[in-house]
Length: 246
Image (cartoon, rainbow, N blue to C red; front, side, top):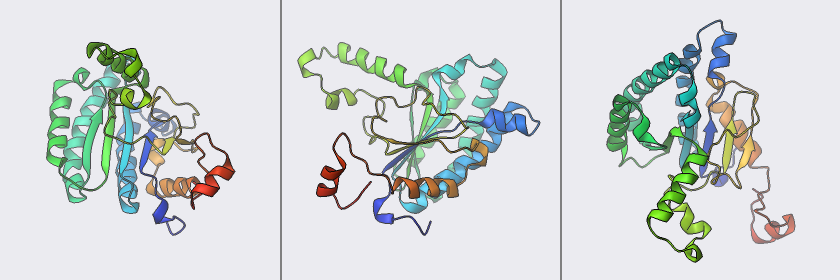
């Protein structure tokens, strides 16, 4: 942490929490055992992000494609989600963490929806880190849904811009991620925040999610601060317009 420049902290970090099932298999356990142990990684990531002043942390918890998994695994994941929200709520309140969610939330089991909305309501006035859970979410689903809303609102083609298109996305009040992290030893995006990560810095640490801790997050931020983010410009242009090379 001592190597992190606290004046250059990323505003928003998004994480694809991959590798729970494989972690369990490597430990000779059922897949749900990995998801259960992944909760500690979530807790550590939230703690670390809050410690250094990150404003938004988005966690890819369940994709629309995950509904195709075996029913027993889905049921176990939904039960774990309810349990985790209940167990972590006091900690979120103590650390002033605000909880939000994106995705097709109406497709979640009723109990999940109830616990989630209760936690969102209770934490809505917290002023610290905002944790966004992506549940029953996919980037393509979100973009298609945005197009449907644009049509429903009778918006003329000439009026559609990148800026106003973004207002129809689930993340309309959330800044685009500066960093996208995917654990699990895989190097792909898996339909996550496809519009929003256009200029995010990508990191693929060779670690399975249950082993992820805030120290890994800090290492990624240190590397992030060595990168020059150009957004289509040349390095010379960026150097001439900003004192920061990130």
